[in-house]
Length: 341
Image 1 (cartoon, rainbow, N blue to C red):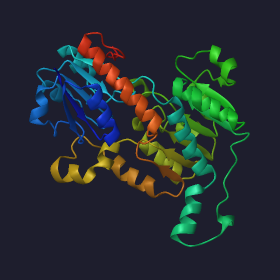
Image 2: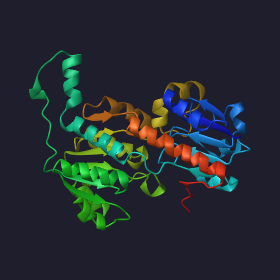
Image 3: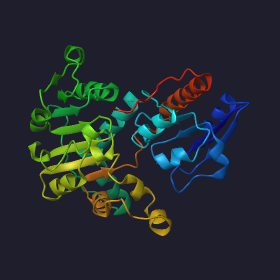
Image 4: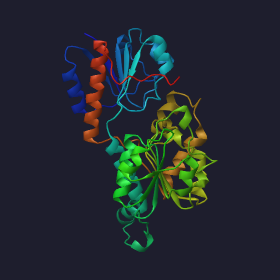
């Protein structure tokens, strides 16, 4: 029997399913994310930890679990886990490599449609102010516009398919371009990111967060986008430099942004707790303030890192995570994540 600790919010049906699948094991469930400030004593004997993207699995956190054999993140991204510290301890890290290529891509286009058709503005006009004036809700068509897709993995490929469905012209950039996809999915790779930015009326980002993608969109290249362009980010917040995005929206170079992720989103999510019980040290408070301003901008639509959040995707995530746990317990781990060096 192994002790397995789950951290982060789980729906009732998810907890019931995992307890059934792990019958015979000592299963602990904590709705609070794992972090240096939340290390329950009872959980410290765990052999396997299951976390979500809101966890902070630092070297110190890993060191607090002397029996640890594996960390399973219920996500594709794993930048919230110190992979080097895990490797030094011989701790296996596993993820969910694919769960929602359509799910996240659909959310990206949901944000785009909400912006292009002024849906949130129209809703607020009717419900909040009781006004009826469509003349103040002029948007723009997607048909005929150029969609720039950065990252042509599973999610990026689905975004390309959706863009084609709207009869957009689709271009894409990927550091590891797969040229055979061009004919299959009806798009064109650009040789550089800069070439893509110069063409994209709509820029949608579908890359993992790595050192190479930190501030991939930044003050030095964001204005290569045509004036009036829109940015959609459902990947990771730090892929976009907040200060550059904020400035381009304020001066009107960008027409809008749809953001499911932002830099410092953990602070924004729980800032009252952090200010009252933790510390702002290590956080960029200027970025935190800009995030609040972005939320209030009429041409910005922000959702709380929820692009993954459909019943179908959650079921796939849970199944794969439980397979990861089974594999680690058997000594035959699957979906293993390695340090990047």
